[in-house]
Image (cartoon, rainbow, N blue to C red; front, side, top):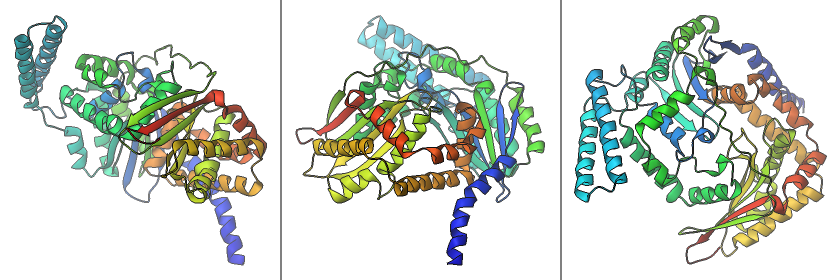
Length: 493
């Protein structure tokens, strides 16, 4: 019994102790060019986890350039004049020849030149590409980091942000700083059209040939009819085919600057010593313009239910969403709690009802912040029926559970379970590694500062059953609802 009491006390106190320890360890610096740098010493292994995050994403794209932020994310791995080029003077001329050949081809197509002329210019364009490829090493940054012990080299683009991450031995700190300072100053978008083909294939696999991706695009287009959250994050096929290197470079030079970024280092660092290296390399990058006012339109309040149907050669599927506010609005945290109540674990309400008791669904999940977090977003629920049940059956069962949330206060035991799940997730983040680096970058860049992470457990712990009931009533209404259904082509719903 005494051992059990100590274990309970440990579970209760450990997150607070870890939070306090982490809070005391974090060092923040702001360089003269506006780059914010966070360092978290952790001597458990001779490794540093890096995350470089920019406040740039899909919402920043101009009409007709959908997905260009994602394309630029790819191109930032292609190197610089000093990383990847075999002869920069010749390669620079070759890349200019590629751009000219592409422009000549575009002009011929626009002017409806003869088929023979278009074919001749296409051949010239492809030859120019081949000549440029001979003058550069493929995947130079990837290979450089691989040769120096990297783990997890990757990047991702969302509607609101772009981040670059990698883990390296701590004695490669200077290498990392030299590489990324060089990229931010001198990025070369080599093999641009080859990479556009890669992105086009990525779109085919993730959006066109993937039923979940295809349904998601239909859903977002229906739910967001004004705000850019409704556009495909990867861009449409036509937009990708229309990418040009000069437009991508213009987007890069407009948005990717140190004053719009946060660099986080978690691991074997000595902040007072290592910040000198950071200043030497990253501090040499000039400050850029502030984030431009893009006049991003607000999504008007939804006045009636919206529905969309997608025919696809796949099993039926259902996606339901409700508009809601984003952080730091308190309701955003309340909806996080509802997310856990509905689908977190096998004892959650929707999983227990749809999958276990009714055996009506193969799976069910939810998200309280889709598809982004900088602007008002959506609470979504997705499910796939288990034959012979249909998506209509799932809708009925889901709405019954949402009505239950509106009409019956969540009991103390269930509320405590959700708080425990929140505490467990909080603890996992505090334990460090790439996840902590990314989370700190998020909070510093978007949520009012990294310190906010230490305040949120208290927010969740003060959310009441009455608040959950009120939020359910406020947002889970038919007029605020968007429903997208995947119907098996020639078959069932």
